[in-house]
Image 1 (tube, rainbow, N blue to C red):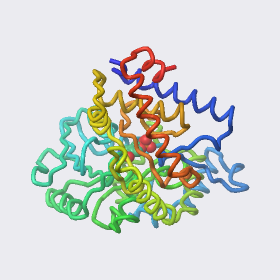
Image 2: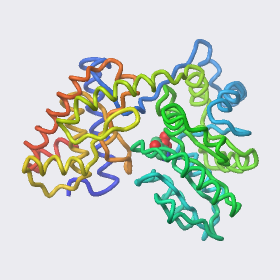
Image 3: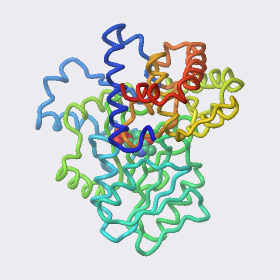
Image 4: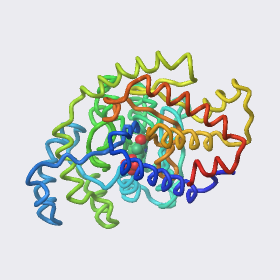
Length: 385
Ligand SMILES: *Cc1c(COP(=O)(O)O)cnc(C)c1O
């Protein structure tokens, strides 16, 4: 096996970061195309930097964030966290007792790994559903989690969302929504209401997904629950530090739905051009190739391999980065990140990449992958060198 542990995933990520470092140094940032849709950003203004102090920073920027968070997520109170994963951990630490159960409803697996891992950490039981007919909340359920949009941008239908809330409400169990990308994808592209407007008690979103903010988690919801989670987050150092909070403020001030809507247009053109060539699928703002699609692709060309689908996806992403300077999550993602190759037209860099360049890069990458697939040494070098 080429990749068999989180440690090896970390090595692959380190190799990808080394390649990016070299490419930027040699040819400049403009030769790189980050199409992850998670490029982050730090749009600070003049004067902000001098306020990034431990106590003055939160005093200024958390106050400024209040109305912006309210507009974006609704809810009575908000909390800024270091990452969305930190928000998930803080919530589970605060609301889930050992031996109690967390029930998670998502449109399609996989779930973000921080959810089952956090439940395990507190000694809770975890059940996951993607079929409403199976979904059950029991006496031991302490928290219901809904994923609004998965890592692969599968969107929950509004009807399912409302139904899960209704069932949970009847049992008096709080509902927490992982709306990392969903807070924008669901509302802007699918015209769904905000999670809190549908009756969710808590929602968290990622300020670097489909917006140009720093990687961080912004949570909002019921004031009493937010207080409990806030207190936990301070105890374990999960809360956002002043630079992140300031970045969130400026990113939310700049945020408009236009780029996401424009991305939908570009996605449609890209998908139309690609679908006869590769087994890509559409996402709300881009296209994707899943590990299983890659296996299908291989079969069609009569290529055999003993590699796992996830390994193929990682190889594909590393070739795409090395040869075509395109960044996707399976190259740079942290251990446990989704292995799906997603090209997000809502990424900032998507505005300056030509559709033909992308098509050419995907074709070239597949051909390269087929050439090295039997050569274990070449595969290892592609992943780790
Ligand atoms: C990205 C994502 C997260 C985690 O965000 P981080 O900023 O990496 O902690 C959690 N859940 C979903 C559905 C996501 O897409």
